[in-house]
Image (cartoon, rainbow, N blue to C red; front, side):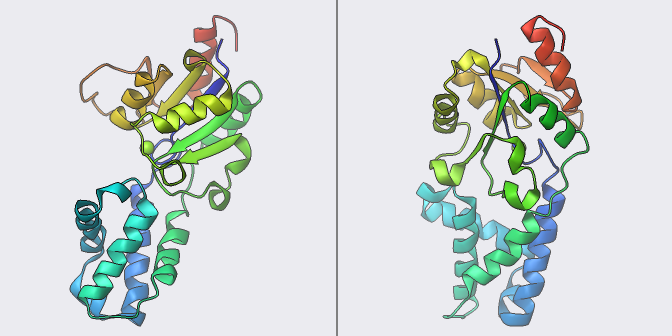
Length: 231
Ligand SMILES: [Mg+2]
């Protein structure tokens, strides 16, 4: 008996990279008007890559993508000789644009139908804001790596979800696009696993998910088959 379904967000419910790149460009434009030496010195991609330096210096914050972005911006401001820098203002330009994602057309109708039968939760390594995106109402709760303190594939987020769902691992299905974070991470704690492969990627190796789907619409039939009944 399946009781609950947990969903990854980025690249599972919407395509994230074009939106992130646009958000990085908007931030770059904002910096050009207020702190011009920063965009003169760093491209949007170089600003993003400063996060790698932050992680190397402070691996304990690697799971917190919001803090990483802010620390990378502080580093850029320091290198461009701005001792005073509005990091919250800069981050909010990025963050608002980063949440301007468009869920795939199958997402809301499918989640609304599934929510009548199962408890739904979201488990994300990113910093998406489901209220800004307008999908918060279909989930019973949402966990992310920042609040939990550890990113998938570590077990902590899955364990917290299982406890909150008051379900056994095999009663929970995790659905996500990332072979390591989602499929490996969820399988390790005993959840059932569904790999969302919208773009026809090859499986990278290692134990496969129990099922593979190319759109969320397939999920309803799959769950009905697993439960041995009609949808
Ligand atoms: Mg994802």
